Amino acid sequence: MAFYAISVPYRYHIISLGAMGKLIVGNWKMNKGDEAGLQLAKNLIDLKGNVVICPPYTILREVAHLLRDASLKVGAQDCSSHEEGSYTGEVSASMVKSSGCSYVILGHSEVRTHRKETSQMVQKKAALALEAGLIPLICVGETRQDYEAGKTFEVLKSQLDLSIPETTQEIIIAYEPVWAIGTGLVPSLEYIEKTHGFIRQMTGDKYPVLYGGSVTSKNAQAILSIPEVSGVLVGGASLQAEEFIKIINA
Ligand code: PGA
Image 1 (cartoon, rainbow, N blue to C red):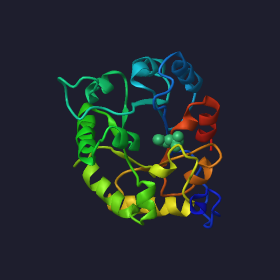
Image 2: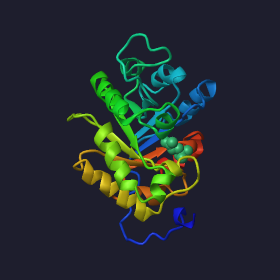
Image 3: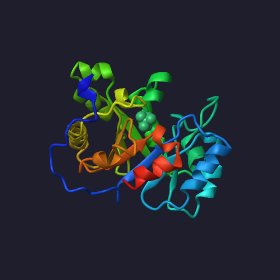
Image 4: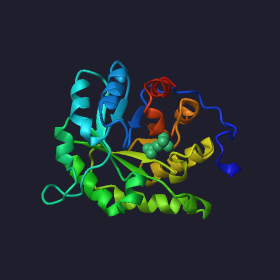
């Protein structure tokens, strides 16, 4: 597993762009859906820059209200592929929008895996999100099995082809190798540069491309220094204000 290690030497000499202008997104997943989440949002309220937090549905409206004058934006972690109707347990894109969100994460590997979401569903959700006035943040990424079989580009191409709707509106792509999510394993900077370059090429360089998967305050600066990387999508490390702020300041 040595080839996954973060300690791969940084072999090129790109002048650090810092995090200025880069987008930092916090995905809280199924954590802090109560008072703890409101407290976390309060601790982030004065942050400047291009930052989005994605709390659970239960506190979206409250967090959005709390941050109404802040530069921080709010996003949801998913939305339905249907507009409205008899879809028990689902939340539509327009509901997400009306709760005060500007963004919605779609196609996260945890949703693709646990809820059998297909790229076609991601595309439908993204189209509805755009219609509702949300910016979809579409996640793609290969599994460890794909990676080891040398199928990364093949998988990315298929996910990009099928998940992105026909549009001229703003979309953000997040490249998240599934094997790097929540594992502490991070691809080499060279690998991140290569995959991001590939995604940009495949999408005509029209969309910002974020990196996600075990981003912490320790590796954020190196990852954000890669010119092909437009920002980061942070899971675990976005749950502590201090750690998340360090990443934003990276
Ligand atoms: P992680 O999660 O930062 O905890 O690896 C990233 C994500 O799932 O978006």
